[in-house]
Amino acid sequence: MVFDEWTSREGFEAFFGGQREIPDVMRAAGATETPTAASYRIIETTDSY
Image (cartoon, rainbow, N blue to C red; front, side):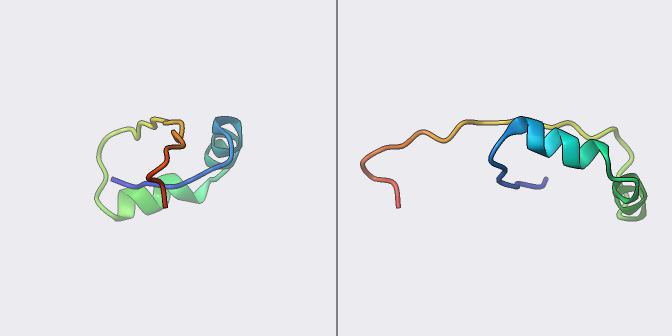
């Protein structure tokens, strides 16, 4: 599992979709499934730090 922070979902998709090396690196690391991505919005609260 990998977590990364982007300013927009579109920016992430443009980066990830344009990388030829990522599938090779994932296979070399032992990944056998197609990756899935999820995005979450940050909720600003009074106890954020």
